[in-house]
Image (tube, rainbow, N blue to C red; front, side, top):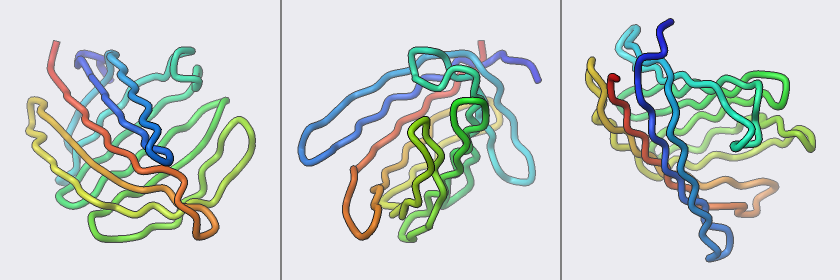
Length: 140
């Protein structure tokens, strides 16, 4: 796959009112398959997941985020209005999380576009964080 797309990801992580903002700009691949859009990029040392590849798969009312590599393996499924249970592998060990899909706005087209989604992470019935992610994809 050609890595001929500029991918900008902006994330807000709210933990008990303490908001952490993260921005990542990288190159990667982008394509459409079976009415779903795929955004793929390699993680770097700055994200803490060097050696991993992340794939965002987006459809009308959902997004999945799969991270695979030597640092961590995980698959989060975010669907608007649904709660999904996901296994999330971190460097510290595995976690079982409830992913509560709050909102998804998919404006992706065959040539790029924007994807926004919001979700909360819960473990053991306790809120861990509320998250908002904005992704922009543009051909280079």
